[in-house]
Image (cartoon, rainbow, N blue to C red; front, top):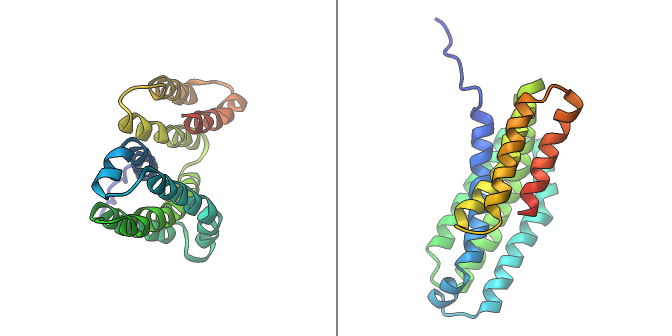
Length: 194
C-alpha cells in the first residue's frame, strides 16, 4: 500500500494557530477589560493585576516549559500545554467571580501558554529544513500579528501586519541565503513591537 503524502505545512499551521489563540486571548482581555469589571463586580486594578499575573506566569515558566521538552518530548509538552490552556479557558469562560478568573486565566492559561510557546519553536525547527524552514519561521513569526489584528479592529497593528506579510513573501524570493536568515528574526521582532 502506498502511504498518503502528509500535509507539508501542518506543523507550522498548528504552531501558528496556538500562537494566534494565545495572543488573541491576551489582547481580547485588554480590550474587554471594562466589560469584565462590570460582569464580575470588581474594580479595574484587580483585573489589571490578573493580566499582569498572567504575563508573569507565562514568562517565568517559559524556560521550564522549554526544559520539559527534553524530558517528555516536543509533542507531549505541546499537547499538555494545549490541555492545560483549554481547561484554563473553560474555567475563565465560566467565571462567576475574580477567583475563578484568577485560576483559569492568570494561572492555568499562563502555564499552558508557557508550555506551548517554546514547543512551537522547536517543532517548526525540527520539521523543516533549508528554504522551507525559513518560510515556516517567517509564517510562524507573523502569527502574533494576526491575533492582535483580530482583537483590535483598528490601530497600528494593520500596518505591522502588512509589513510582516511583505517580509514573509521576501523570505521565499530573496536570492541570498545570508539575507534570508535575517527575515524570520525581523518578522518576530515586528510581532513583539505590535
